[in-house]
Image (tube, rainbow, N blue to C red; front, side, top):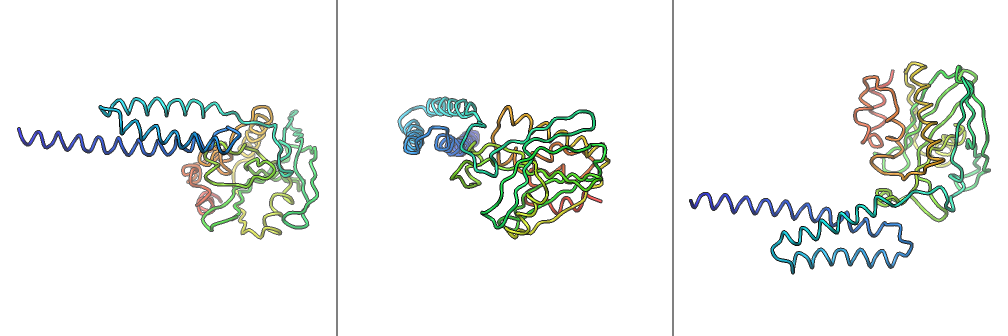
Length: 295
């Protein structure tokens, strides 16, 4: 009998310990939901975040038995989650010049027309001639696909791009990025919490690649892929379909699900490559994986 009591007490201790751990994790997430919400005043977001933490602590201190505090917490967190999930993305903000336009595409048979294709010419990192063009490509001449990885910060983190090559020497380069407003800078933590919109930049190689290699002096690696032409075409059309959707229905950049790598690779043909299988960590180990998956 005594042995059973000991096991019961041990079970309760473990159960409440795990419950407490889950509550603490969710409380941190909920606090960040409030602080990084779409409320326009920083002081109000801070005040509400502190109030949220205070309500949680007060519930567990003053409400007995403990399950009542869990009910209050579940209600608060559910309310926050619903509110947070309803925060909309927008195409109507004061955008930085590099992301001022969202590319769109029209396809008529084999003729592809891209509107607002970026073709900036840089004199240094911060000075450039802005140019947005309408260009036409013949999809029957599509013949190659290159993956590019550019190291912009810590050596373990790379930015992913794709470049589609045509038989006439033209290229369409694609980079998925955060669409930043005037005065904004990229912040990894903020990018978890709907602080940036998502944009597919469709551009000339002399824009997207040259600014990284020639002016930012980032180590950039190119890996040709041996996909069949029909697979390359399907990938390009999927990407163009995605940017058309964003032009009409904006979405948020999400560090895990919709980042510079996953947004591109989820559409890639599944040709039994290691790359597709481990795509969530691709910004870290992308070049190694592509080397294993390519020709």
